[in-house]
Image 1: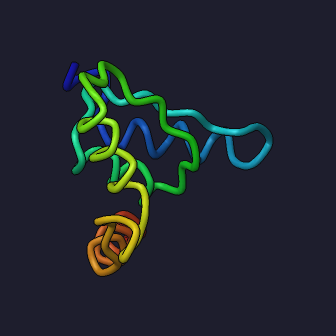
Image 2: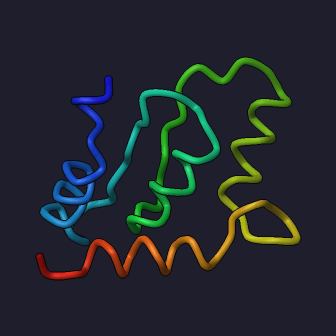
Length: 88
């Protein structure tokens, strides 16, 4: 799954689609760090696979919200955005 879900590929696809239609991203696994990085790309809709139970669903929901409702942070998004916008 790592080859199919490269962050640069996901970013390029999100940019290509733009705001013409809603973008839905389905990560290969339901992990908090993946949810946060997908949101940092500007995606507003995430289809999280294989939710095991209510606790897992709650964990994924918290990853999508800033404090105090959730665990999403601010600084990491800025750092990743700066790295992605940097000309190489």
